[in-house]
Image 1 (cartoon, rainbow, N blue to C red):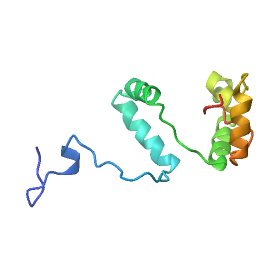
Image 2: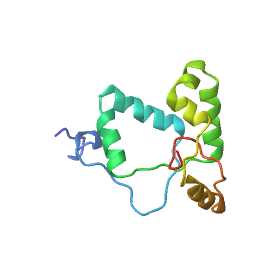
Image 3: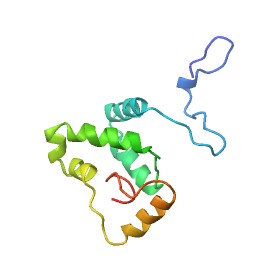
Length: 121
């Protein structure tokens, strides 16, 4: 194990991360998320992360302004508009049973439209 001056191991040399404590969410910039995903892709770990996300039902809360910025970004590129995921992001199609979830989201102040990539997809 690599050691820094003073005999302590550097954080990058340990296999155990420093985990968040408490229950309060934090804000992470979209740019940081993109950088993290690029690192995961670089190390060919996308499939493992996807499996983990599905198994643990991981989620991220996204403000409407961010959702709309991402929708506009997808809309501004023809190839992304033509992609099935891009089309779903731009124009989500509600399935039966989703109306109840949308009504609950609207009551909670989340609005009645879905971004096309969340639970209401």
